[in-house]
Amino acid sequence: MSIEFLLTTLVIVATPGTGAVYTLAAGLSRGARASVIAAVGCTLGIVPHMVAAMTGLAALLHTSALAFQTLKSLGVAYLLYVAWTTLCDTDTFAVHPATAPPSAAKVIASGVLINILNPKLTIFFFAFLPQFVRPDEPGAVVDMVELSSVFMLLTLVVFVGYGVFAAAVRTHVVARPRVMTWIRRTFAASFVALGARLAITGR
Image (cartoon, rainbow, N blue to C red):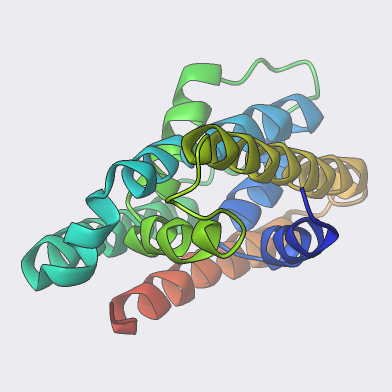
């Protein structure tokens, strides 16, 4: 495993995106435990893209405009739905006591969906992994699984870091409803912006 792969992966993972925003929102609204669960969900959402890239499904998304557009449209619609619920459902994004147990299944499912419905991730793996693994070499599949696992591990570590940081500062906004209102609006706007960016991206 090359240092170039680790550095490139770290830059890609650390760049704020949909998963990072979702994890930050979980940390602010529910605390450290929920942020870790959200990070796990977003990381698990990478698995289908990794499998798709290794089985050639990414080539289908790259060559089929209909398949790519369908998955992209579903992703945009889901991001807009998340933005709407974040903006309108004040109870979902209210700062609850740290002992309030979040629904782990719901948090994980949302995190998985956010990443699954992003076709750019599949194409990213399709374009990214072959730069560090020659597909025609013996053991190429094992190498791709190893590199993908490292990518997922770094994703989990970085997202947990984002979420724990958000959870650490949440106590400073518990008694400030106006601040929470603006934070909720900011996250809603972020999801809309991410959805817009996905909508205008091509194959």
